[in-house]
Amino acid sequence: MQGFDTELRNRIIKLVKGILDQNSLSADVTPQAKLVDVGLTSMDMVNLMLGVEAEFDFIIPQSEITPENFQSVETLERMVAAQLQLAAA
Image (tube, rainbow, N blue to C red; front, top):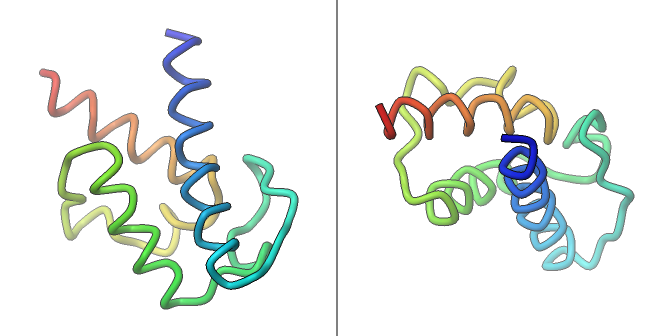
């Protein structure tokens, strides 16, 4: 399971860094860093949400599209892992 967690985290970090690159920004994206603090705007959050849906091939339920779930890579990772578990069940 640990390998999956690391892969999941790396895929999310790659998405965040991709959005930062599009904005000509660079930042140290750590799991705990607040996404707004590394430079993501509200529009970037929408792009991140769409990117997560495409990357992991699921639609984020409306109830999960919350500021709490999109605070950091860590919170996003927890939400994605939970959704993937529900899909696999």
